[in-house]
Length: 290
Image (cartoon, rainbow, N blue to C red; front, side):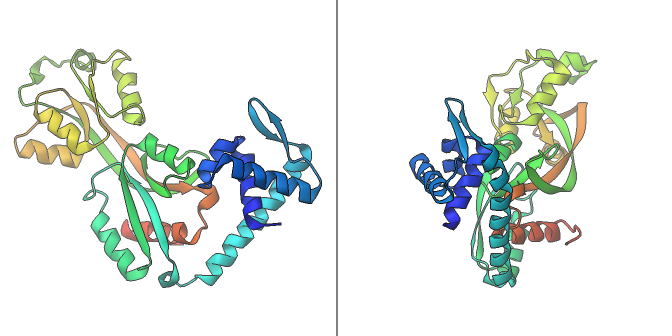
């Protein structure tokens, strides 16, 4: 029995789909299928019921899943033990950012990694909360920052409480905004289908908000607002700086706060590179290190 056979078995059991399991493990569906077939032959039992809707565990497969997961966890613990000194850990952490590099204190994180874990490099992806969650689930990212609650299949911790406001072009006549509903008649620059802020905006103003532009990048949205193309949500500190520079005006009618979390996949949290990054992120934000 090979280690990668068990990884394929667990991945298919969790996703119920050969294609999704292959994406998670960076291989192909035929390879995953071959691993499952070999494992079934070696164990002399059927692990999955195959149908047009995907693959579901047999009763025996369900029993073996728990033992397979324990075996994989033990193997990860062995790797962790062999690499207790973070200076010996080598790898790349693919991280999703939903705010600017400055706001995420990326330079400070890179400096800390260079000192504490020089073998770990960062692969940075600037994107929205929802996209980061999906990419962590699909194993395209190792972790990242998200706004809102932590999904059940991820694990993480709160970093900061973020204040969000609305910015408008300098030409915008704010004196006519008497209620929140008045904002629903104006053009908005949305964050994109993956961002929870868009859902919040629709909850407050209705689903038929005028919008022809979408971008998850704060800097781009700010430039579009400055150009007079619409209103948009923006992190408060950045909005105040832009207002101070006489680039935009702040409309406070929809102000709200949201928790910024750092998250990783629950089933990968003990991997050496990911575990090391979790510790570094806690140190970066002055949180209690376990």
